Amino acid sequence: MQRVRLGQTDLEVSRICFGCWQMSPRFWGTIPLEPWRAALRLARERGVNFIDTADAYGDGFAEEQLGEFLAREKCREEFVIATKFYWDITREPRVPNTARDYILRACESSLRRLRIEYIDLYQVHAWDPLLRPEEVADAFGQLRREGKVRWFGVSNWNDAQMRMGRRHFEISTLQPCYSLLRRDAEAREFPFCLEHGIGTLVYSPLERGLLTERPRPERFGDHRDNDPWFQRAVYDRIRQGVTELKPIAQRHGLSIAQLAVRWVLTHPAVTCAIVGIKSAEHLESILPAADGVLPSADWHEAANVMGQARREAERFLAGMR
Ligand SMILES: NC(=O)c1ccc[n+]([C@@H]2O[C@H](COP(=O)([O-])OP(=O)(O)OC[C@H]3O[C@@H](n4cnc5c(N)ncnc54)[C@H](OP(=O)(O)O)[C@@H]3O)[C@@H](O)[C@H]2O)c1
Image 1: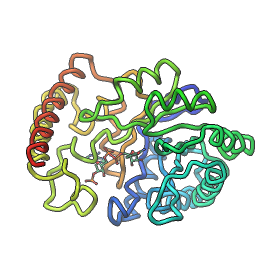
Image 2: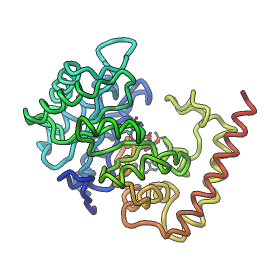
Image 3: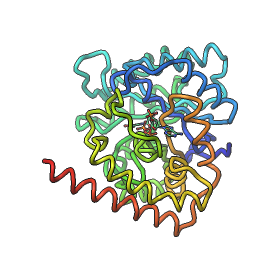
Image 4: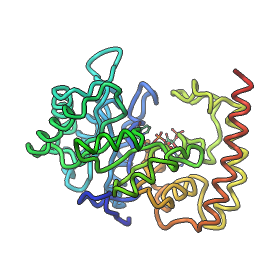
């Protein structure tokens, strides 16, 4: 698997990043662990060296499981580990906390759960309106001096928030949502990242399974059962668009899921696509997406097809309200 430099860091990462949100029972129900571990083993074999997790995924569960795998297989050095802090997972209900002392504590807890000495990329999970940049800078400075974190990034921040943050601390990466259905990052965040050499790891490139050919189950048994985009009538409109993507995918010998991931990887501001993985089959079947980029005409055609599908789905949703 081809490696690329992550922004201006010294991290060399695979363009497919292994996403661990699926290890959050709160959102995804109970995930069988053996197939997930098999996926991690496959990642090692195939050179997928970038893993994205968060303390919030399963309130520590995802980090613990990853830590157990890394320790048991003695393979920490083979991976670039990205995790996140933001929600105080020790309280219910969870609330954001970006205070200096909280960040230091959260990092210690992540290191303990992950059973590692240092985190390669430590990300602020989302924007906190109460964030005090001097405190974040103080905590980040200490974590770097102590060798506990190598690089820092943010997730779900807009360009103005990054501009402000960068006056106080280094922001090496942005983790935004980006897919054929959600392209908001193109307008301001991507130009900002390109201008400042910020690496991007984009999430939900498959729109949690909408941008695939897998038939809709009667019940998902997870958060998708309550998500308007996954209700039958809306889902069917999106899937109509997916059907229209098929000729484009076929021109490149790709499945729909591979096309969706290659589409995000084609954008010049995108460094990596984080794909949510539950099994080796998930990972295996997405890998070919990383072998190249789409020609511009096909990229635009796919964008137009799914833009239309999204508008129809939104019209339908608006009518339901
Ligand atoms: N920073 C943030 O706020 C944030 C938010 C969301 C996600 N993320 C990160 O980004 C990662 C990916 O995002 P995501 O989980 O929202 O969405 P995603 O990658 O778009 O979708 C993942 C889902 O797609 C299906 N899938 C995966 N591989 C497939 C394949 N090869 N063929 C067909 N279907 C496949 C699976 O659905 P089934 O379950 O139906 O098998 C899986 O649960 C997360 O794991 C997490 O690390 C970050």
